[in-house]
Amino acid sequence: SYQIEGAAAEDGRGPSIWDTHCLKKGGVWTGETGDVACDHYHRLGEDVALMKEMGVGAYRFSVSWPRLLPRGRGMVNEAGLDFYDRLIDGLLEAGIEPWLCLYHWDLP
Picture: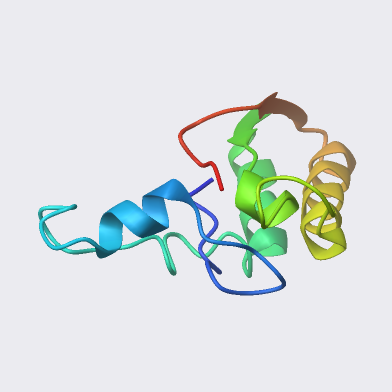
């Protein structure tokens, strides 16, 4: 999710371990961050339409836990839930099977 979604400081998303790592001098060789990434958060509909056009049968995506649990525990971020709800619904409507990865290096 960190490498794909972007929108790192939007809709209640908290900082992730990768946000912190990328901001450290020398943390990432090129100094890049996931602040925008592939901008999947904003291009969700377009991305799903492209997958459908390409005939993709399944899409594996990971959860940005900082988007769902901005403080690492406690209150769930409704905007984060809405994003994944729209993603899964969009995939299913396009005939694409969602494959959820629960952990891919993106923790609060």
